[in-house]
Image (cartoon, rainbow, N blue to C red; front, side):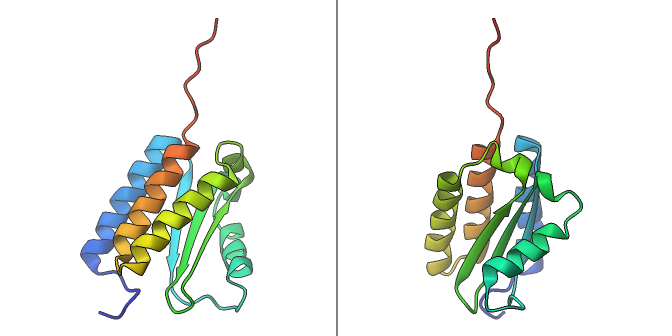
Length: 126
């Protein structure tokens, strides 16, 4: 298996992680692993995000192993719950796992962190 590829069992594990993340925070997660069709990985990730069914309620995680790039694009509704600093922490966590050669662990860790931070806070009303 080439670097940057997910096996069938890895895909199933990633699907479980995504499903748990979506249940946790009620936003949709999408993952793209592969070569971006543009040198500007951010622009490519944004175009992919805009093609999602409900971009305003979606998070797209793009990993381009060849360029060693990670991009996270969040929709408007998601940004109300997930700050840029929280996204940066998740990207940093993913980067360290990817540098160690673990694509699946990096994606799982990053998605879990993003979902935890995006989860609406429980508030008590008087």
